[in-house]
Structure formats: structure tokens, C-alpha cells
Image (cartoon, rainbow, N blue to C red; front, top):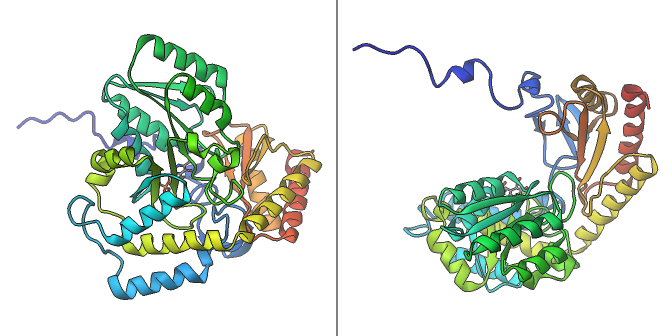
Length: 409
Ligand SMILES: Cc1ncc(COP(=O)(O)O)c(C=O)c1O
């Protein structure tokens, strides 16, 4: 049989096409760096001890003895895989149901459902609710899982619209035009805390608009849960508007130092998601080793509020000192601390990151081209309750010295 030689699907793999081309070749230095040693504020990078500002373990719970003890007990009794199967078949246990009830209670909602990844949870929530004639409206800077969920939902002949980041006039314009042409349902989806900039979604305005236009609101509070609000119940609590958030979502991948996620809301809505979210129906349910450690982690979060207080003390000091020294930290409203820098080009960006690591033993994640323009560097510092004031000062001094050496400022 004759074959046609052109158009091998894998050509792009050999030609190195795709994302992160400018930094891919740097041997795990700028992207996919390998940190070693126990998780914490001091880890090894290329065998050198570093002060680390890149771990989303905000409350230092990754090393807490209580969830660890529970993990050992579950491991002994059930191993790592129990239960086997998807929720609808053989993947549900009383443990899952108890934890879901506990999460719902924590969020002041009637009910909740677990997902085995936050990413899948957001996608599953959006796609199970948004159908033909409905519209999903998202913030321009929304997390990739929100974008992907909205795009997938659009395949079901729903509309997908994007408003300029935190721009309420634009959101209102879109809501108005949507209402003018359709009487379908509307879902607004935003991050609670934006993971790169630390900015908060303007919930009071969003809630007012969603009521005016009879829309529903899903808030992905991956970086807000455990941190924002008086008792760590997230951005809804922070703004005193949790009852207006129709669906409150979070992953366990940050503050809970685990894996998985959940969405909480009215019982009827959660029930609908349970029976319609494809990542729930067609994927293995979260193993008990996670439900039980995450459940204990939630207890610890509530029992030890001093962790949140300490996190905020560290974050505020870091942000105050950076501003005092003339660094641009944007408009963060959370512990996430971005440092925006104009480096001029990608080489200078890399030199900046390298100098911090090699001269000062400080490891921060650098967000660089193609996520930001080539002459821009966004250093993303994530404070935790385990950092010390000395580490804050050492880091600020290192940034000053590096700015002088690399950028001549
Ligand atoms: C805002 C936001 N949503 C969802 C996710 C995805 O969560 P997970 O890592 O549990 O899939 C992340 C993680 O990066 C996130 O920052």
C-alpha cells in the first residue's frame, strides 16, 4: 500500500515547537527546577541550601504531625488506593460523605462535593452547569482551569465571554448585552485571590452585578482559603459576602498542603454537579489517604489560628519593606507578593534570578517570557507562617543588592 510521507504528528516534538522554548534548554534552572529536602522555607537547589519563597504551603501544614499520623493510620488500614473506582460505581465511602459535610459546614453552605484535582473540579463544575443558551463570563486573568472549563462548556453551544481583569464596567457591559439577547442562565467565574498578582476579586461589585442581572457566581478561592477572612474561610468571609457566593470552590493543593478539591453550595446544585460532572463520573475518586489527611488538616486550621496570624505578620513585613525600598509590588491584597521589574530583556531577567540564587542563596519563582513580555520579570514571593523576620530582611537586602548589580539601579 502506498503511504503519504508528509505531515507526521510528532514533527513538532522534534522541531521543539510550543511553549517555554526560550527557557526550556536551561537544564531545570529557570523552569522545572528541582528542589530537594523536606518541604519548608529552607530547601536544597543544585545541592545548595536556599531560603525558599516558592512553596504554597502558606500555613506550614505540610509538616504538621496530626495529618501525618492520620496518613500513617490510613496507610496501615487501607493502603494508598482505597476506594477503587469512580464515585458512581465503587468509589464512594462514608469518609468521603463525612468530609464533604464538614467542608460544607466550614464554608457555610448546605452541601459540597470532592474532586480528585482542583483543575478537574473547576472544569467539572462549569461544564456540568453551563449548557445550551447559557453564558459563562470569566475574568481575563482567570486561572487556566477556569478558561478551559469555559471553553469546554462553549462546545455545548453556550456562550463564553471574557471581561477585562477586575474591570466592573466591562463586566456590566457584557452582562447587559448578554441579557439583551438571551434569557438563558449566566455563570460568572472569578478567582478569589489571583495567584500571580495576589490581587483580590472585587466581590462586593461582582455580587451587586450578579444580582442586578440575575447571574450566578462561582469563586475559585485556591489562594484564599485558610488565609483570607477572620477565621480563614476565604474571600467570601473577608468581604462578608459568603452568602452571595453561589458556589465556593477550592483546591487542597495550596494551604491544605495536599491534593484534591471541592465545591460547596446549595444542596440541589451540588446534587446536580454530582450526577453531571464528567470528572466525577469518569474518574477514580479521591483515595482515603487524602480525604482523611485533608479532613484533619481542616481541623488543624481551625484549632491553630496563630498560623494565619503569623503568615500575615510575615507577609505584611515583607510587603512593607519591599515598598520602602522602592520595589513595585502591584496591588496585592493577600500574602502573595509579586515584585514587578523591568529588566530590558530575557538575558537580564535570567541573570537576576541566577544572582539571587547563586550570590544570595534565595530561591524565588521568576515568571518570565512568554507569560510576561521578554523585558519584564515578575518575581513571585509566597510567604508562609514558617518564614522568619530575619529571612524577610535577608531577602529584601538580596533584592536590593541584585537590583544594583544586574539592573544598575
Ligand atoms: C486558582 C487555581 N485554581 C485551580 C488550581 C488547580 O488546582 P489543582 O492543582 O488542585 O489541580 C490552581 C492551582 O494552581 C489554582 O491556582
